Image (tube, rainbow, N blue to C red):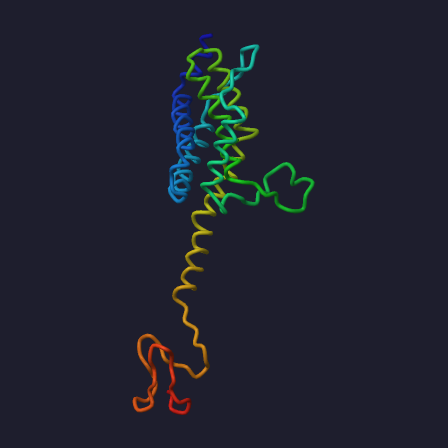
Length: 222
C-alpha cells in the first residue's frame, strides 16, 4: 500500500493528471471555438500530454477488478460528432502507421475527430477514477492509462499531431495561394489588349479605354 501511495503522488504523476484534466476540459468546450483556435491549442497541448505521459513512473495493477469507466458510447459519440463538425473538410487524413497497413498497399483514411475521441476516452476514464481518491483504484487506473499510452493512444496522439500540423501549415498555405490567384491574377482577354488598372498604353489620340474595356487600334498599341 505504501509503494502505490508513493507512485500515485509522484511529482510526474501529478503533472500528468493536471495536463490530462486540462486536455479533457479543452475537448469538452471545443465546439464553441473557431477551428483555427482549436488547431493552434491542440498543437500545444498534445505534445505536452505526450511528454508528461512518457515521464510517468512505472506502475502495475494491484486490484482484482478493473476500475470504473466514465465515458459511455453516447458521451463518446457526442464528442466525436462535435469535433468532426468543427474540423469539417479538414477532419480526414491518411495514416500509414496502422496495423491494417500490413495487408494493404494504400494508406488508411483516418479522422482527427475519431482519434481525439479515442484519446479522450482513455484519459477521461483515468481522470474520473483518479479523482475518486481511492489509492488502489487510483493506482490501477494509472497503470491502465500508462499501458494504453504505449499500445494505443500514444501512437494516435502523434499521428493526429501530424494531421493537425498539416491543417495549420500546409493546407493553410494552399488556401492562401488559391485565394491569391483568384483575387490578384490578371489575364488579358486578347493578345493585343494592354490596358491595365494602373494606366493605358495606347497613343493618346487613339485611346478608347473606358470601364467597358479597351478599344485601342491594334496598330497603334505599344
